Length: 407
Ligand code: 3PG
Ligand code: MG
Image 1 (spheres, rainbow, N blue to C red):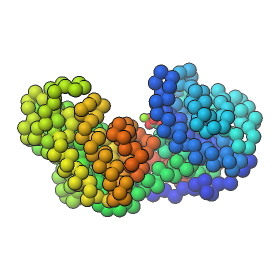
Image 2: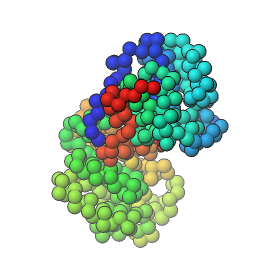
Image 3: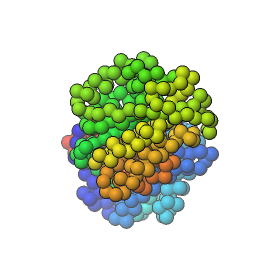
Image 4: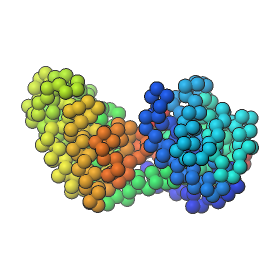
């Protein structure tokens, strides 16, 4: 994406002012429990800084996909409680993000207070980026701080529209994410490599196309690798692969050659005839996959190759697991490579940047999240950024000063 100049909290004097903080409180919840509080925890520095500087912090966020309806199970009320616990300071909650309910809550605030407003997606205007909703949100505050990098790929009222009406700033988490992405692909130490895994080429075409221009080494794993192998005449048995993508896969490989980007594919595989925990498995060379078998992980020789290749890199971007890591023993390849990435990073030999939903769970499963240089809180936004797309939430932070309209 284009480089964006944005203001940070360093340029904001928020004492006594009302700050509308766009957070991403869209944390995973199962049975009423937050299963991963990372997004809440990563947001704390921004809230703490604003509150300590005497701002009145008005937090807005979406949660899940209620599609413009009030869906009680998608209320932010329990998340606001969890945020208060994490912050160690009281957080009040208002039952609507605009209108008299929101205004009353804001009017009652003192300097340093934090209020969370109800799910912005309860209003259809949020996803429609309705200017009226954006104006109503903006009318609550003096400044806008966007700390929701993980929602920056959405041009919604609370991520994009509102920035047209208020002086706008990146929060600390947004700033950290943008700096990490800059280190990864815009101004990286070379050689740069990328690990791209996951099931389908068809969903990652733009991403691969952009990476070919930017990285010297492209490691392909997951079921996506099967498509590349099959496109080159390798028999992959009953493995998941996309037959209709063979031409595309060959074109990608040709483009990589032309750009001088080395594509690294598996040379062996762990196979099974069923995708179940602890089924009998076989390690086979990639040109000897049995007809009735499925490739479910990279094999040990591939792991050695990848570790050796990664040791030659200075920067690594990781999106997507190498195998079907959710079910053991098909996590072994991803675990081993993740541990090596963690080790090289800790030794100061590699900068490692990872993101995307599955990737983060795979790295957590491998026990290396603390060893990686940077793990993004973003799923879709991280992918769109890797695709070289312009993220509307970030563009809005840049252009607001020319476009600012009176409210
Ligand atoms: C995410 O979880 O990726 C962000 O919160 C965006 O959510 P969305 O995909 O529902 O827009
Ligand atoms: Mg999502």
